[in-house]
Length: 286
Image (cartoon, rainbow, N blue to C red; front, side, top):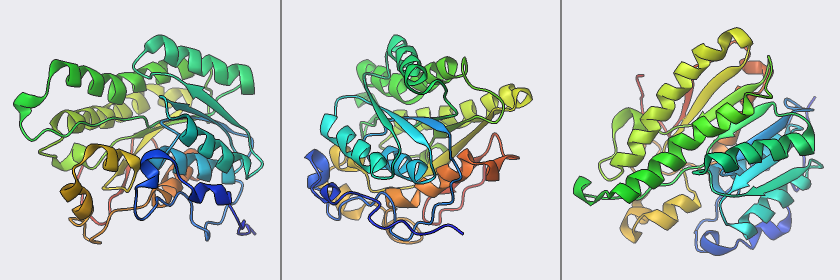
């Protein structure tokens, strides 16, 4: 029987740097009541955007389940170190890889670093993302389109292409899409467009890799309380964030992690090309 591991997160996590220090309440990354069961024992996972938010929650849950972790992040060194502290508190190893996912050469190099460190990669979590709210589509510049699409979808291709050189039957890819891919977001037109592309990418890559026994699935979060929200929305939007859901609140990253564990584990061995919707009660048909 699995046991509850106490003190999953080092006490220093409460002293959160940068944007997270201004977040009230502070994001929760894993629940004290979470019960691990060695579902990922012996696995190696590469998580993009793993320094904070959903990526950090995935790293925390995967480590609790026995996986060694590599996280890719842009420039948030302190946040990345905190994620490493969380992973290492479970007794697992955490490799930090700093760089820009918009650069295809860097993505390939990041995968090579994982192979050099762990000799394998079993789980790829494409999660890095960026958004720039604009109320008027005419304000979406060419530069913004370039950054958003290269970060949110091009990088998913780059990492999948590089990682698949080393992945085998039983391994898997999990992509982070969004509820905005299914129901629109008037102020996030370019962002929601990339999330729609991620959903289709997930389905198409899944059928492409099915004969090789490599599963590809996605998670579509609704409003989740992460640093991305505080850093990109105005104060009015932040105060009401999540109130539109059936549960009348935003989700915590800790409420996303178990969905990724399920898709990464053998429990999901007959699931590919699918998306789990963790969105607080919004009905999604598609």
